[in-house]
Image 1 (cartoon, rainbow, N blue to C red):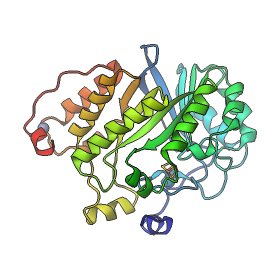
Image 2 (spheres, rainbow, N blue to C red):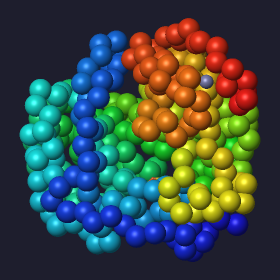
Image 3 (cartoon, rainbow, N blue to C red):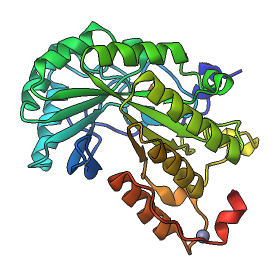
Image 4 (cartoon, helix red, strand yellow):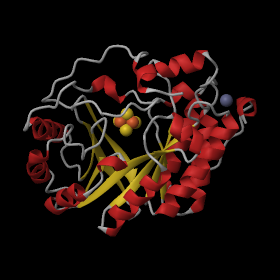
Length: 311
Ligand code: SF4
Ligand SMILES: [Zn+2]
């Protein structure tokens, strides 16, 4: 049984964070729905820890124990925007749910929207539990489009339960339909090889999850190879219940998703060296993934003998 207590008991210490500074920010190129490749800023907001305790989550590391004061989130955004002049697309990722009142105080919505008045799209993330009329209020305050990213994680029913996310496939589908009905585009986070799955099962269930997400009406899927790093995942590695996926599996799932031509599919490219032990092809594979992300076309793959070990 996966319990909060068991997950929490393996945690280490949190990092020191400043409620008036985002804990990170970056600008990267991303293909837009229009087909144009644009610079997109991501601001990793510092706020109160998510009330859920998902098995694979390490986002709690850069959070506060209490709600941040009203005004702190706009101050973080203002500071981050000054670091990324000219950017017109932004993701506000907050280690939880943007529409969780204890994470982002609703009295801050108007000032946040005003800071983002020149942006074409604003992407936030949220658990289905927090998706309601508040999303529409925030949408109405923005000049640009609001998009919402939701963690589907996996459609494997047993594994989804074990992830301790307290979400069902119905909850996901209802949230996507509610948002789409109200003119808000949605994207899904999908895990590649969560715990308790073999490499081939990891690929299979990630592909099934992409199918499900597009059938629900999401516009974009992001495939995230699962990594250790939160304590409990290391414990599952010790017991043989979790193995990090191979970079070649990420390519396979990305190829599958792009091949569907049902919407954009991106592979998460953060620290891909974790998912390869082969010095001969790592750089080539990372380049290939980046090119497929940008072009949304399957590019040729070079055969490397290491690939056979993991297929
Ligand atoms: S809902 Fe998201 S932020 Fe919250 S614990 Fe789960 S994965 Fe982490
Ligand atoms: Zn290789």
